[in-house]
Image 1 (cartoon, helix red, strand yellow):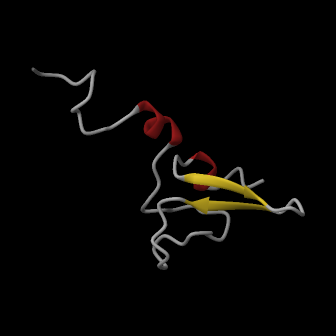
Image 2 (image 1 turned 90 degrees about the horizontal axis):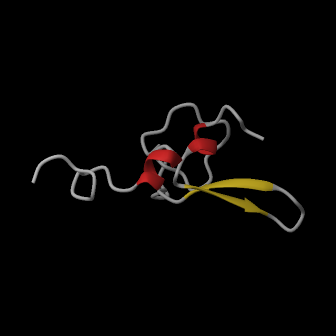
Length: 71
């Protein structure tokens, strides 16, 4: 529906479909404020809370899990 929206590729997006078939994209990182609204108007082109679904599914990015270089 919103192919050009960052929400479609975000690991924090949850799709909500109403009983009437309306589709909403809910931000699970939302704070309720203007910076990260729970249901952002679409399409979203820039978002401070965006994290690619692929990166998020791959695991922590802090380097403390398996695959980290070092000791």
